[in-house]
Image (cartoon, rainbow, N blue to C red; front, top):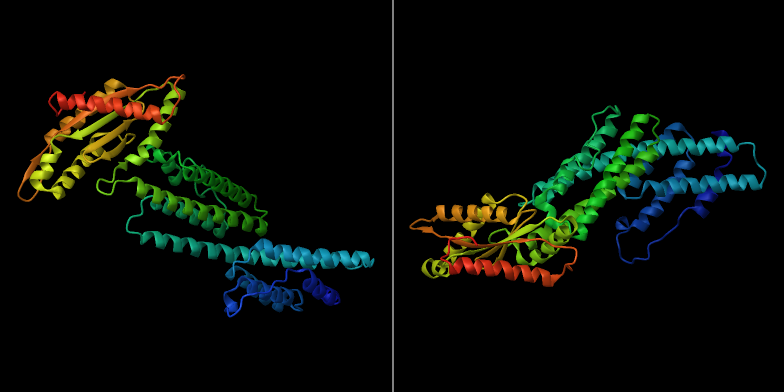
Length: 426
């Protein structure tokens, strides 16, 4: 330490002249709230650490600096770059003066500081990361309707498991799922019930973030298993994982908004405004694969009479009842839209004409066999259904005109079912 103390004036000069110096230009602002103030205080603590003269002093000042750095969201890379800037300038000055005698001692001095700082920073950073994710979990748990956020909840638990894996320092094979397709979050992304979101840029970004997150986690696990750990590497990897995690949370929150606006407030089915987007996507898929799909259009029979007789509130109950019939009768892969009023459109992926007719008959039969039971009345109602099968060939240009043409075709089939006596399928 005596050798190092000889270079304290040069160290002080390098910190003063070559570390980042910024000052607040805000007036009448509490300096404790400002990042610029934190950087200025950080510089003082950094210098205080480098000028420490005993092991106890070094330990105490390292703890103070690292705690301050994390509390004020100053990144480890900033702290590391400051350390490298000082040692590089100091060693450069000594080389210029041909003072080579203690270069190895000085280099060791800074390397030991780096090791102490990075080890302590990793411990405190992981603790902070755990607290942040636990707080995120608690916020989600208070949401009255989590929707897609329930999947972000499972993702946060995955992150917490990864943090525990590092903190436990055992590095066995009991680590979080590393394959992005096999974790709970990845399985949700592959579910058919969420595939209508696949055409959104947010969903595609979410997929990219999720794959990158798992790739980083695999690197964390492999790195830990090597047992030659440099804390700085883990800090960098976990910091990036947290960034990706936050971005995933933001994208899911946005998808939640899409989901909310895409659902009919009465029936909670998809709305007509999403139909065109999904229809265009299915036409493209049909063109690429040569597989047909079908449309089914439903209209409740004599619905105006129900409204006129019992009132619109009862009419709403009937609409909700029919929505439930559709959801229980159809497949999970089918897209159900409230198309307008008492009209419903169902898109049946990879379904031919015969299969569509069979499903439509099931819906027709299920509707006629049930009744809406209210306090003083029971209402029986029926539905008429039109169906068409769609095959898109290579010569077809997929556009809105094609979508409109198929809507007209299935609407004509529905009109035919009405003309031929209702409570039937065409």
